[in-house]
Image 1 (tube, rainbow over the protein chains, first blue to last red):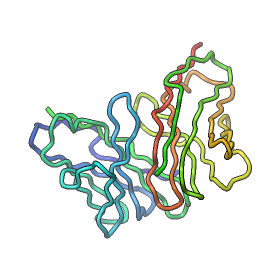
Image 2: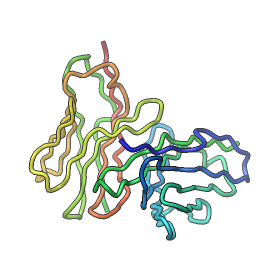
Image 3: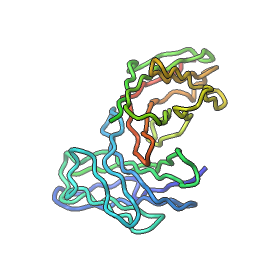
Image 4: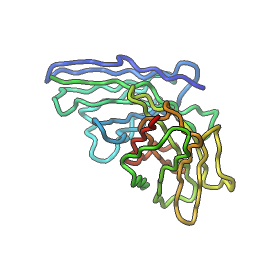
Amino acid sequence: GAVVSQHPSWVICKSGTSVKIECRSLDFQATTMFWYRQFPKQSLMLMATSNEGSKATYEQGVEKDKFLINHASLTLSTLTVTSAHPEDSSFYICSARDPQFSYEQYFGPGTRLTVT
Amino acid sequence: AQKITQTQPGMFVQEKEAVTLDCTYDTSDQSYGLFWYKQPSSGEMIFLIYQGSYDEQNATEGRYSLNFQKARKSANLVISASQLGDSAMYFCATTGGGADGLTFGKGTHLIIQP
């Protein structure tokens, strides 16, 4: 199956700083990528849909100025958490859709963010 | 908008028994997809099985099968001959007909006992 990577796998940052998470499709071109957030012992919540060459579409309640998404190429999307606070600590997972297949989404391994 | 309901927060099952994980969905889309994912403690999301809303036959993938009852809006996952390695969180999810992201249920924590 297709492979999606995320970097870093975990990160600790201080409150008020920004942190960037990368999501890459390694062996296919992904016109659409998705960003999810998962709090401990909870489900995944879709944050935004990232489309190559256009602005991301954010889900209701997600602050677009806080969670900046850039889909710079067909294999790379980045999520930047700006002015991070402890309540932003979470597990962030991306997925990518392979245009060759109508439905399947391939998930990255996730990034665990801890804000101190 | 889509909604997924998983009513079993946790389940204990004896090894080698069959397991059914419940999932009901609500959607206004005519065309939609139903997914099951497994999430072990490592956090990775492992795709198990997919059912399209227009598929007449239940999907099967090895030990996994999806019991799709469209009229009841039900998409239960059946795992045959459970193994210790099946212990994990299981999420049911759906997506609309377009290039939509997934809407997940709250998940079921499955524990297989020897």
